[in-house]
Length: 106
Image (cartoon, rainbow, N blue to C red; front, side, top):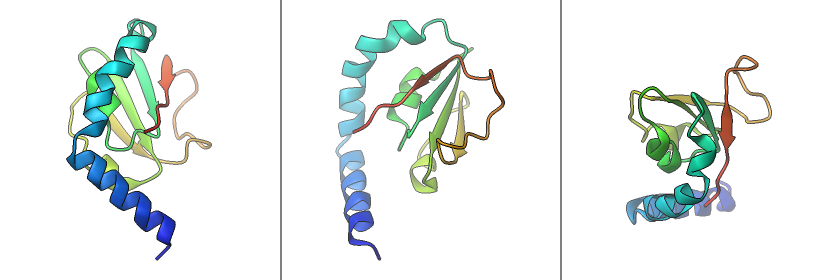
């Protein structure tokens, strides 16, 4: 096993259990929420466990949670979130589908 991948997986798991992602989500959303208010479809690139996707998801908005790893996507359960496991450089989405894209790192 790759030591860097192991470290990353442990760190993400710990941060998720400590709810660090959710805590900082509100702070970030207050800065860019006005940018996504008119969007109908938002793409959350590199969504991880979906903290931002979950905060943005509400009717009639659709959020596409995109991550290259399947494991974090499994933690996302919301009828307004479409989970997509893919490389952001090769999006499996039709042109013009997305109104807004966000990509926030931890």
